[in-house]
Length: 84
Image 1 (cartoon, rainbow, N blue to C red):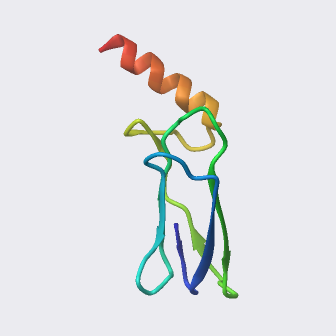
Image 2: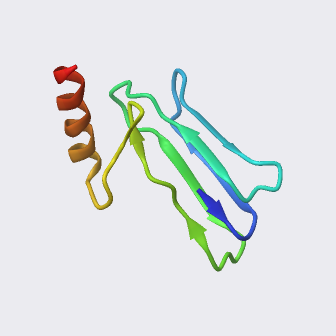
Image 3: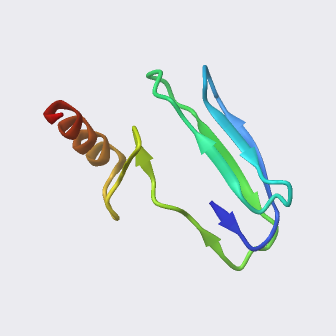
């Protein structure tokens, strides 16, 4: 996730190998969440950014199609994994 102004973040209930960090200029937010069956995430705010770009999400390394819900993306990944 990239903004044209610096961001602040607050991790929410991270566990295990979950990770959230900002780049040195605080304009890019990196995160990786592992599914331990609980809620986790990140709260963030931008300093008056005019643009916020969000990259394509991935589940287990597989790109989710645009507009897909997280559960649809996860189910698609499970079907792909079973067919291998």
